[in-house]
Image (cartoon, rainbow over all chains, first blue to last red; front, side):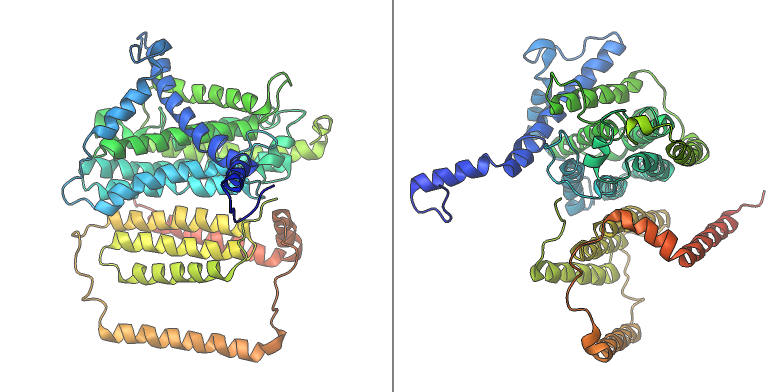
Length: 344
Length: 171
């Protein structure tokens, strides 16, 4: 029996138990919320270093605990926390310290609408896809403001490049998801996954999968599109001046965004939680998402960087046109009745 | 289905405060960048109003387009136009301009209260019971209001052509 407000210790314990076993608390704090996200971000930093090392015939992290140095990210984290945060001369202090926090916040917030399973979603809202895009579209402005707040040349150049990049990729990215929305008939991410029970949308919307994948590579500043943080030209791009805990926050935000975009690919094109029944739904979701993340990471060890003008030309003359043409193709496919067997 | 709305007057008051204070700071900030950030906060407040009115789709688009794109363009313009950091802005806003703004705001308030007074009891006092789903927006635009939609499209194309003409460089 749960009584509110509690009067005896037993009632207090009953209330606390009731709260921490409630679905809302578990989804927000444990899975798919805070603890799960932190663990995945820690894992992804190690995973990227190890994967790139293998591609380049190196060994990568090795000594810090466990198999393959899997505790290396923890060691890095401790090191970064104890380092001094250097604030550049005449930098804007509130923005310099506040923007990294906002970045973590903004990249964690969209996970509220990502369905990790039929019941493993924090907020099942009608406009989930638009919500994710609204939150991620704020990221370049955060980068630009942080770059400006650093009061330094290289971050500023990196911030401007980030803006050019946004102009190039954002419109193709939005338009390429429209064909998925047409196929599912909904902007709700849960409904989009439910519509893929018989066939994943990567098959009827293959072109838009290609466009979306290239666009999120640019969104995530992954090679070959890592112009804003180009190491040989701009030191470390827009976060050159970040140090210590600020640097750690920025990295957490970036890797959370990597996970976010990979899970969005899984939701939109790879059938979300659907899979053979011998594994639970969230496990299938995480496996698919990590595979997508692998394919996003691999080009960093393989490809060179492209120039700003090449990026903008690709975005506006190729990706946008393919995405627009794909909408008409999708409408034709839906009206032709070829997809009726898959319930579309 | 989880609704985005917290049905309370407190959220309305907080949103109003955020929007108006953001707008005032956007006009008064000495550093233009802080002004742009305050403008973004003001836009987020307006998005909150849309969410409060049970129009989550509009709220999301308000954030994505106004905060995500328009404010970024403003920031871009501020940063690319060369000026000294922390330059004095006070010289431009003299007393006459300030009083002009006050007069305009007073006129607007008078007009709005006049409209409300004339409308009287015919104003709806309660929100419609069921909120409209997003999927009703498309049919409403294409079937109910096709002419405004076409005019809007023409206007946007004209704006695009104008931008192209302005940006054209003679070779």
